[in-house]
Image (tube, rainbow, N blue to C red; front, side, top):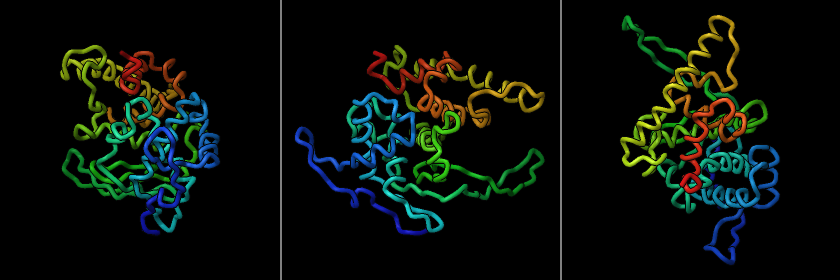
Length: 277
């Protein structure tokens, strides 16, 4: 893979703010370009945009970008990825605390197009099958995140999609083990008194929604039924349903709340814990 990993903020000017500790700053022009490119970022209230800009700058200070197959990762590309990755962290307290959710890795590999991954599967008869899988992104447990740049750049432009949010939701999901669609939940989540009760409340909301969505996709595939608004890839596993749902929640929150009225308040409680109190 080429070129060598890029320590992004070594190339940005460092400025000191009067009221806080020194934070590497993303230039106003570069930030404006990012929020104009992705409308779901531009619709944030101005205080949230300012907070996201600072959080993204701190994120970039701790991550390394590698362009695959000769791709040159530009400042604009890195900021686009950072802003989308940090959006879910916006209401999780102090920047260092929020970014701790992503502290199990450093590397972000950006591909110029879709990537092909060699896979192996064993069927019910015990026969091993080898095949290639086309990927727009992939998050590895305790490892790097891989992203296809065209998919990153197209976030929010055709449907409620963001491959960056999708893959970073897998990272959050994997904070308590293998991705299973249930991330670590904060104490008192949804008014519960224990971690066990919190997970029971989560499952009570997500399991029926997943099964209903999966059934809708099956009917569409087999019998020509109406395709759901949410990306059908979410029907492949609970972990994918969680990641796809989070994409839609952040890219088009009002439509998500309309389509999934039982899940929207659960995600509100997870991503906006202070407001849920």
